[in-house]
Amino acid sequence: MATTTNKQRALTQFFSLLKNCEAAEQEARPVLEQFIYGVCREDATREQADLAFSNLRERFFDWNEIRVSSPREVEEVLGDLSGPEQRAERIISFLQEVFEATFSFDLESLHKKGVKQAAKSLQRYQASSDYVIAWVLQNSLGGHAIPVDEPTLRVSRRLGLLDRDQEEREALRTSLEHLVPKAKGLAFTELASHVGQEFCWDDEPNCSACPLAAECPTAHELGAEILSAARATRTLARRG
Ligand code: SF4
Image 1 (cartoon, helix red, strand yellow):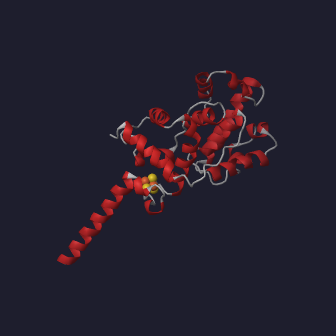
Image 2 (tube, rainbow, N blue to C red):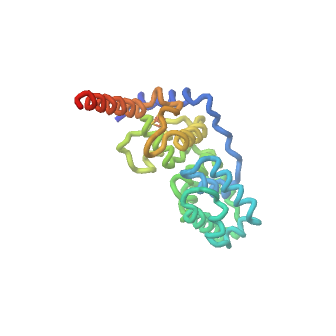
Image 3 (cartoon, rainbow, N blue to C red):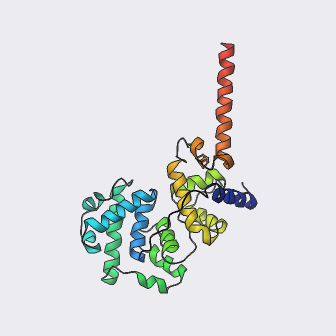
């Protein structure tokens, strides 16, 4: 298990090695829109989420039209997001719940609640997830929250920012929130997602192209494995 000091050192290296990668500014959006954007952004690249969200805005007249559309119609505009059917169902069910409760599509009153109360309110929606709540808190409500999806989790574990035996998503998010200062939360979210999607693939991470490879313990382990496999092959060839 990595010590806190080691994790802090790994985080400093993370920001230092990625200093040339731009963490694009998030667009300011109302709470309701940030929730829907969060549903699109989980396990997706920023470009995929941007495209899906702008399609939702442009191909439907308003949020009410999406609410009364079929999942199939919504799914069709989500581009190449993974699990489009489930995402479409979540977006429709969220809009339906908001409309039934408020007869509008406005959740700006959450700004007046404290961050904890706002998180509880968001949690009540069926379409909610730990990621989406953290996304809205971080991007709309001024809270210190780190949305953790699969790419972010993979990168954080492989870099040693999170312990590998830690499983529970909420606990993992809390660990990252303790480690990453609030002022760097947005940059961390964007950069970890970027590395996870571009280099740190699930099966075979592309460490040779990754800007973090020099300081990444997993890249070193994988490098050692590849070297010892090559040595074993050479030995077998000599004996043959
Ligand atoms: S060096 Fe390899 S394992 Fe480490 S973060 Fe980059 S892609 Fe992932």
